[in-house]
Length: 410
Image 1 (tube, one colour):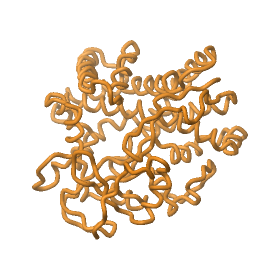
Image 2 (cartoon, one colour):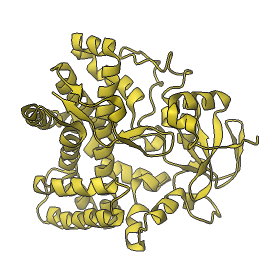
Image 3 (cartoon, helix red, strand yellow):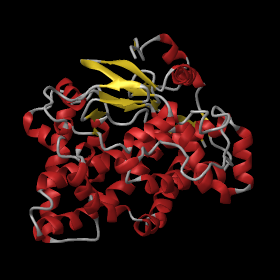
């Protein structure tokens, strides 16, 4: 199959990304897209094929696991564009997200207890407390930026607590994470600050362990140095804090906008607030801030979704397209908080397969608490500017948008 290269920079993706992805999805489950600074990438557009790729061991996340492969990965190209030096690069290449097979299973097994159902459920009182305090401050002011004064402080506090970052240090860590995600900031400086702080924290927890993830990981490293290195712990903390901070913080305004745009669904939830935990799944389908799955690389020549994939080819799945796939979701462009799906179906906002997001349950709980406090227990929240005045940025062209501010009145 010879497919023309699709540009996600074309006006149709800017003007109507959901419609553009729908047309692309119906044309083919697999298309070639251009990638800045690198070769074309296969984009998977349909839910079934994305799940298949994310569960297929012939596709790996670490390009060095492709036999005989030479040349940079997509991550290498991105790190080079950010001018990340060799000292820092080692932390990024040691993360859970770029490991395969036994090494990935080892790292995931060590960190998984921090995200167990019991542990996440035990965080509810703390999440409720932080949320209530932030809303009280917001109400006293009457208006402000929901993203900067509620969403990011909430998710930042919770993930820092879970990981084991002392409360006195959390504002500084959040500042580093904001710089991490700011294209205009010094990425390397922020990374160096976070990684240096984590190394100091490791020594603190070695001397005085507490009930947190870092203490558990330090104990594991000290008991058997072959199981976990300091570099792996530092990388793990960076991944966990970054993932737990940004994604849910941006989901909250997306979900609020969805409910305000669908007043019948908001009225239904206010009448039956006990259905909110179920409704969160639909809101995450519609309002997912993560546009695509991380790249996978073919370890051999193979046929996939009707295309001839060559060894070393990169593939990524459009989560936004998958979450609107009519093969899974009837009337996908309609928000339906009572939507019921067959077992095994559902949104792909957390990915699928061995690399499915560890923090899914935490994100769902944070979203539930936030929407309950902001939209169900009160009915006064409104956006303080016109929709056209809302400012956002795109992680990738044509992908889901992240608000840079979300002014509201309460």
